[in-house]
Image (cartoon, rainbow, N blue to C red):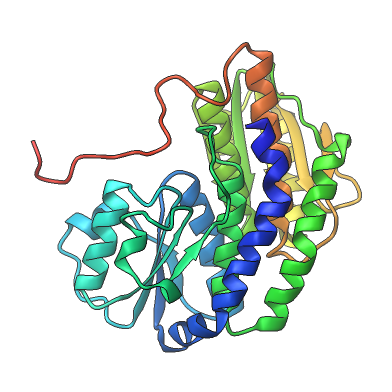
Length: 338
């Protein structure tokens, strides 16, 4: 996991290059779509949360993350005019495959975003509609480089009709990621916490989701994730002196909400950490990121959370690479199977 985290800047650079090469072919799909539906599980679901925000704010399309199981095995109606984007590191998840096939049967256009060119999922579409993470082989069960490379693919898809926006991200984001990884002040120690909350708003909601997944996977502990504003609507009252509250933001609204959430959590005894581009905050620890456009921020903000999960596992004597009870590919029984 440690080695794979360090690979991320160059892997993201490769992912951007791959999607740039297909942008001209992908742009007409966006032009004809009425809505975008995103399918993903685990870290691919977190990436889909990011993508839904990108499709709404960059492409101007209604977009939502939907349950692959529900789409696959329910009686949902026709999907003509929908662009369905299936995100899967392995391309072999049972429900993602079933949902993708159901989407095609119901008239949707399908784009596959995967790390495995030869996967079953990748085989459902032609080359022009298959975007590869270019993450290389990922050995650790907790996804790091496959998460950030999937973000690059999904941003590229949302910005397929805006080559200048995509070029700017491809040129700048990998170097910014490298700078964050090299900066020791971005390390967060949550090894002594008894429980955890991760939160983010807007583009940063995906970072909160992904940070919670990394902590759950590496520490084998329940970890909650929220939109920051939702956390303030009652759930903040659940934190205690043993809670580590990790708050991320991608824009000014998110920073404001981070401040309020940190203040309310601290009143209840929790340890608070903010991760954003503000010069300073009132949290117990502030990880300051470079100022960037909101859609770049998750590439940077997730890195301290990945490293915090890894380091906390090591401090607790756990193996972050192969957490007990988890595997890289999840297959669930098809509805109706015994």
